[in-house]
Amino acid sequence: MADRATVDRMLAGWPNRPKLAANRTIKKYGLPNEATAARLIWHNKAPFKRIMVVREEIPHQFRGSTWTTVYDDDQLSRPAWQER
Image (cartoon, rainbow, N blue to C red; front, side):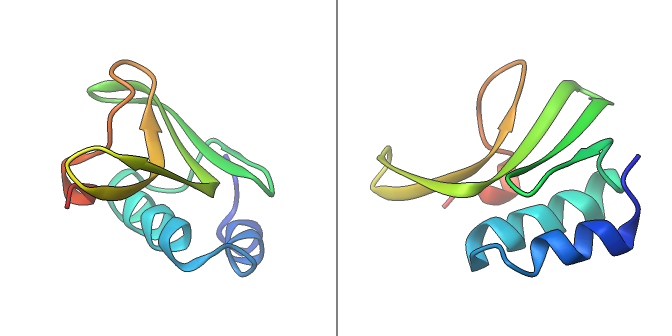
């Protein structure tokens, strides 16, 4: 498991939207199991097998203009709190 100081150092350089998504995910699921400069990953956090927050903001046109930074392994969808 990643420690809080390491995660905070990595998130310091992230853009605002991914940083907000990472902090909300940490608040809900605790510290990630894996942390790199580009992504944070949680394993086996019910109901998901894997949750991943990525530094890169990926724009798309789904229900208007949106950005995706949080993925789950089972459904490849955003958590409800990230919906517009």
